[in-house]
Image (cartoon, rainbow, N blue to C red; front, top):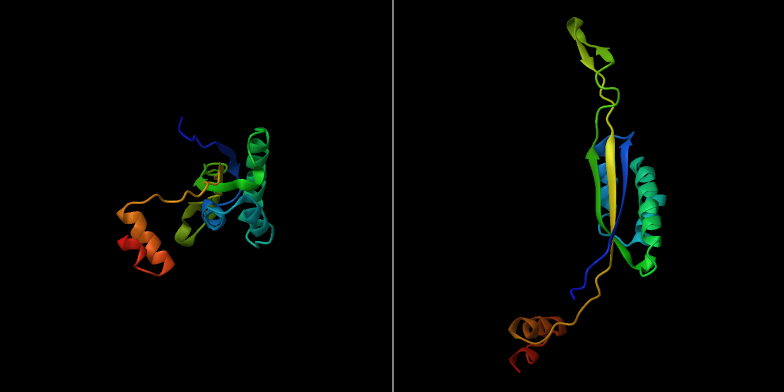
Length: 146
């Protein structure tokens, strides 16, 4: 049987933050281990860090329901902040120059966090590529010629 990875997700829909602002924080934590990401979000001055921390804790709680998962070995495999609908539509308008009016855009976001278990590192078996890679890592070319 193939080693199937489990993924755990949490989504905050219609978050009252512009996706551009939340996207900065999502890119910051993507690929990080969960504990490091929580620490980074705790000390980040960005407003999106508050929203992402809540969604990350929710995804961790979802993962906690599975007894086979080590919560400390989880990594953020995907973190996104997609655009939601404009809040209130185009109900409110702002006066502009020459008697014109433009709509007030209150942007919302759909924030998604997906967690996955960290891959266990495997040692490479022999072969031309494996031997050459091992030789360059160890610094000698003698091993590659064996």
